[in-house]
Image 1 (cartoon, rainbow, N blue to C red):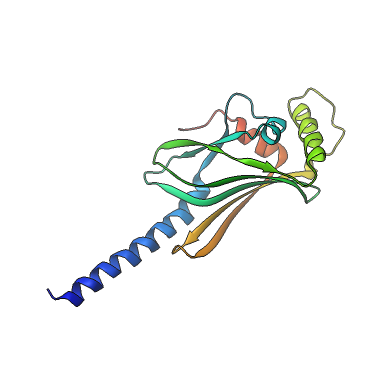
Image 2 (image 1 turned 120 degrees about the vertical axis):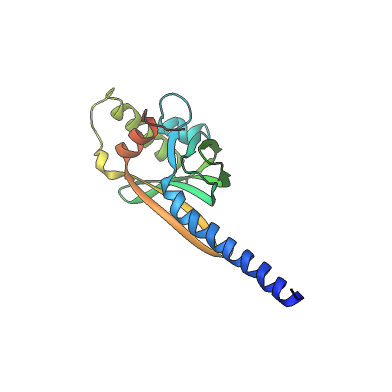
Length: 171
């Protein structure tokens, strides 16, 4: 076999391997299960204590992303973002992702978090319409290492709260 054939084969393996990993991550990232770090998930602790989220990869191959954000919205206005740097999650395993919460209206975010925590637990009456609280999760993936691609999932406030407190965590 001559030099040129070997170079073409190696280049093809690299290109198709990179493309395959990118396509796999586009498929696998929405399959990740999210769960609160310990015990009962609470919005207030999430934004004040630089809390963590467990991410479970129940698939048979590594799954990776470049960035993960949880955007808290009230009346479709962003109140803060929990940001996690990229990582690779081993197959059939979970990782504890540490993040940082930032907000332009931090005291308002704290108030809303405290109110919705007590309301979702049934400890206080409904004074603020819970349908106005929405959560967006955004995973950013790099396709072929250079093209940013974002996968966004929308949740109601109570839906996100219940998802992070579910018992059905498979990892």
